[in-house]
Length: 229
Image 1: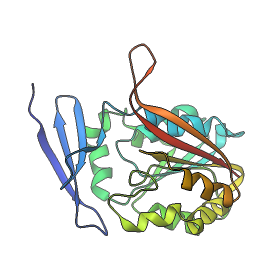
Image 2: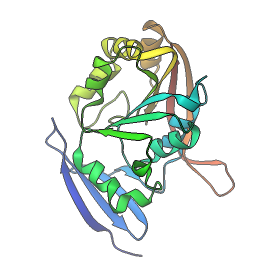
Image 3: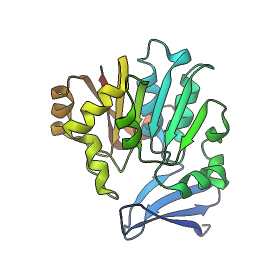
């Protein structure tokens, strides 16, 4: 078996931990220093893609939609959104760690098909919370794959996104009929209740971490919330 090769380290703003990028052949892994388990792997991205495809499928004007993606990761959510949306769509990606953008512009970009090179995409090296706070009926969809979901791991300020105040700000940022979609490694009924209390119509879906060659789901079960205004 090929050994893992270290490609880069990146400090996480607001945290003592670092993101670490590894490569083994055509496989990439992003981990958090101090944690044994992976944060992301380029061979396991079915639920990240489902976050985008399920949300964008609900949009009435997907051909020209404006979408905000919170968290670039390995680019699979962004790539899936671009495949689902039309040529006139605009997708803004908010990524807090600049090295993650650089990795996606470098060798890691091949994994998801280099979605950052799509002309519909713009990148903001900012906390997605800043963009949400500043927006007023600006987006048709907000897709959040931030810090492992409502139970954040790396950046304590990410918790605001999932509080009643954060959910209210996201609702103001969305246009009528817009969708807030949230990815999580675990299912949390308390978060479902917070979404409902914030005035969203909520669907909760369980999706598998990856898709097998037969098209069926495999691996861990993740959760996606689809919350419509």
